[in-house]
Image (tube, rainbow, N blue to C red; front, side, top):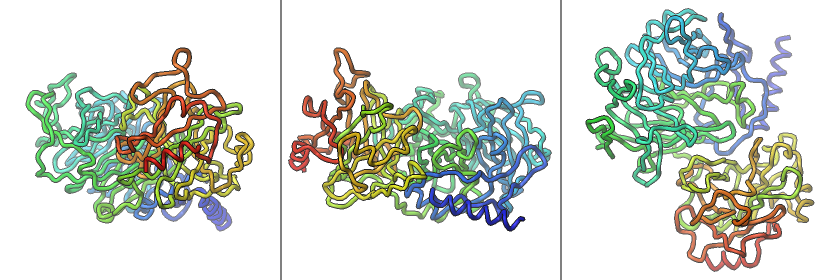
Length: 594
């Protein structure tokens, strides 16, 4: 019987290969590893995973680790740390049912669950916070969330029983929102996740050395002889501790690790959007880049920006905490949680990467090239015919002399018309992919290669219309497109192009940095110079249902910030759709511009 079950498991894994790189089985058995408490280590059942060529650097270096505890019992993984004296990996998770957040202990060598304990603010009050950060200092374990760092004695954790509780010994208010934390060289770092809908203090908003704005700090606290933040420093608003050091970091950071002169950040947001592992070099003797007087005496600030970013490795969606264990960096994902399992690439285990190999890596996933932009947006259909507007598309033109493999390139849809800044986080991100990536049952082949001076239509497929075919698309527009003429982006519920508001659309290189990797962009239902919130009435829209908008190569060239194609009035507006075919006036504008 066991042999038959194992054969079925192997067969299921082989089937899953069509969906992307396989997520390996748990340490050898492929079965659930049970603890004596309510939580188990169980692999996810076979799921459709949307692959991406952008994961190649990650899977080249990464090795599978332990299966995450509690995925089948409602845990949502968040923070991670390593306790060297016991060779334990520590993991925090929260629950959506109002029960206490937990800390799980996994033996690093075997990958087996040792115990899971419930976290308590005091003897009678469960801690139900996000538990986003976790780290270990000399004698403490620290959990961070909700503008607080919670300290526990390492000995308390070691002595806690499986299924028991672990009580915080102290609670320290922090300057940041305390989304994540790490410890290195006597400093407890407490950082924050920032987006337009995750507010941070206005004093944390600052432009870096390239002029890019970010909204997030990591505050560094030098721990005292008691291995804690000195009480004398806790003089800020609400008793918040004043930091000794500050890092200005990009937005959407979920975790951090420090090793020597290297600082690594886990960046992610959303179950359908690729994550990034960012590596920066910051020599300890480097002078501060700025100061803040928010705390009375000046506190130094160092930027983690494009000037000291060393590399970017693209990961599957929803990376969270990261932690160093000896020569390895461990990476935690929350996408295997039940709440997020419908995402593009659910992960049910830890991964580890050799730090020396990671720091020496020359990533192969390309960013935007310098000079003349190779990809132009030449047409947008935002109000397609048909119920539910199932045939929205964006047309791309290869403006270079080389064929471009579009697999892994991205389309960014900015939905804040009054703030079209490159770094604005009000953006929906779609990857360009094959028909089979959108619908695993599709038998239509997709040619991802875009030849020089040719166009390709990117069909924005919505959930209720995943199974529509190229024949359906051709019937909608009276065209005769072939597989070489079309590729796809997979939208999820609630996504699509707005008809009656101004929006911005960009084509972005596979590395995906909003600021540095944007190749070219367009706007519709308004101009970049005078953005409007909506159209209609006295402010006419650029198109009606069934009409498209086309774009021209600017007379002054494409060398400005963001590389915007020209929306000409009235020439661009109210067009009969021509997917896959440029108008003669567009061809002339490109020839003139080049």
